[in-house]
Amino acid sequence: MKKRFLILVTACLLLSYYPVSAQTEPLISPRPLAIQMEKGSFRLDASTQIIASKQLKTEADYLKTKLQTSAGLTLSVNNASPTGKNKLALLVDAKQLPEFGKEGYQLIVNTGGIKITAADKAGLFYGMQSLLQLINQGDNKLEIPLLTIKDKPRFSWRALMLDEGRHFKGEKAVKQLLDDMAMLKMNVFHWHLTDDQGWRIEIKKYPELTKVGSKRKDSQTAWRSEKREGQPHEGFYTQAQIKNIVQYAAERHITVVPEIEMPGHASAAIASYPWLGTTGEKIEVPVTFGKFKDTYNVADPKVYTFLEDVLTEVMALFPSKVIHIGGDEVLYDQWKASPQVKALMVKENLKTPADVQIWFTNKISKFIASKGRRMMGWNEIMGGKVHEFTDDKETAAKEKLDQGTIVHFWKGTTEMVTDAASKGYDVVNSYHIYTYLDYDYKEIPIRKAYEFNPIPEGLDPKYDKHVLGLGCQMWGEFIPTEASMQAMIYPRLAAYAEVGWTDLSRKDYTYFKNTMKLIENHWKAEGIQVESADYDALAK
Image 1 (tube, one colour):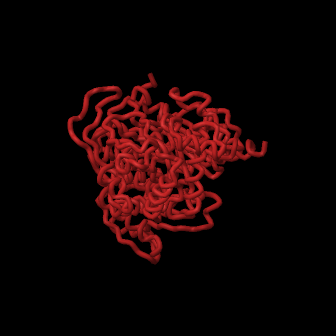
Image 2 (spheres, helix red, strand yellow):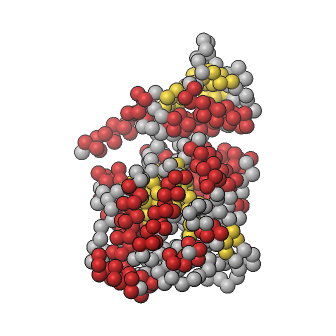
Image 3 (cartoon, helix red, strand yellow):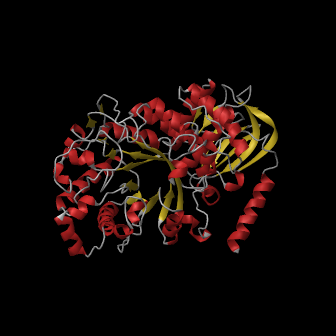
């Protein structure tokens, strides 16, 4: 009852704070929590100074560069506040934390200038993104309406995943995505770096992973098709490149979460080092896509040494507190046929293959936790029947997943989300029928993406806090080029950004469509391939 009363009070405050209609409200994507408009405007000009402390140099320099490129305006940065008006002030004030959290902000435009205040640099950065969108509106884009914006995100996890295990895209493409995520206030870049068809990250202790595992002889062109691209595919990131990209993301307040697949989707690693596999047989990096039987031999101590060595190098490159270990679509055939795995099951009293996977996952989780990090994996790591290719007996599990694990839901019943959250697990909701960017616009039109709610229907509100947010996934099996990737991501990326940021009380699809006229123009000016999609189309 108390929570419902607080929600009602909050809604009333928002209504009282928002006195103008959506038609006169400035267009900002994602839509802010509350806007109060005043009569008049403030004009930015060459004499306006950016006022920021030395501690905010990165943010001030970013804003200065963006104003140069988007508005043709070169402003000076001053560490001390001069007398007079015409200021663009950036301020971090820890006292704002209770109201705005680390990612919220207040943006005030009055006749004396502009002031962005936040409790943390992240919130300040997001306030700058709103300001940049305000500047790019109207015939006179340097004339900014007088207003006050109070804003903060609905969810703390607002992610885009890029799968490069299947098709390598490269540093330039990744940085473009990070720039556009930053504009839309998305804060997690989930980087899928290993899979059956390619190993894309340099591991110095195991050079064959990139010498062998980053290359394949050909590529399938469509599901169940015999057609091939007719050329080899290869590519990987050096550790120096990864450090550069991680730093680039950090400057945009984006955390890069690496995904190193295990115990399945491991063919590229096993092709590099056959002793990693359950059978020990030599294989090649696959040229087709789908599910493969090759899995890590979870009964061999040498495999754990390998995985711990790999994860140690990964964690040295990625400061993220979360490390994703995949865990999806494991075919149990090789484990069921392996004398070593059978002996392990007897020794550890593991009744089913799902128990074996949870036991393995918990060993990895404990290692990651010992390094001060937290493990995340796709929802198969909890056990339970998720796929049609498994049966109830082999997916039934008595083993319990470590409580600190973040469960990344993508497939199964929505009851699996409510079950995980109600048991106290933190969850990121990436239900595939709403969030998979490799699905075409008939399967997931923009409106369907926009209407996704990461908190599933039927979840007791007391467990809402365990739903951290959402991810949208750009799987790369049949997305070979940067242009084909962009056509699937844009414009749906903006819909997912709003799902993650905007409070439900403020979501309005007509407003969103109007913002997209500006956002699409911005993307096209950057040379991005934007899909000409129907904003009013419904799912087939």
